[in-house]
Length: 160
Image (tube, rainbow, N blue to C red; front, side, top):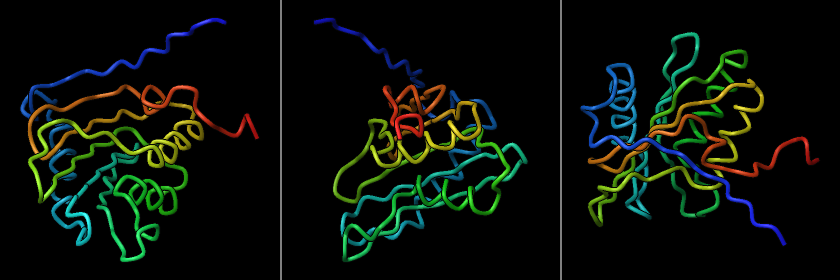
């Protein structure tokens, strides 16, 4: 047997004020999107903002449904809309923020597994990384230079 260590490297900022101006603006867009989330069942609101290489910023929030599997996370809302509306644009940076009505979310909250898989599909398609920034309602912000960094041993078309 052999053991392989696959590192995941993230940068941690103390708060949004440490971000560059462009990323701070993108995170503010994600916060605004979070505020419009439809989350009557979980009370867990998520907002995402995606910067495209054409300068467009796409925002979205999670949308829940009484039939739980029918809802959609903020991250997938954003990437699927951007992919449909701007199929030739490259995704440059994504900011994600989450807040709960039931508890305070100070720790950075990364995308779920399904969202990681959806985002990495676009990294593979465009053959370049997408910077991912994520936070809770406030507090620290984490940055990954790519989604593949957060999803080692990625499942992609090469295995089909």
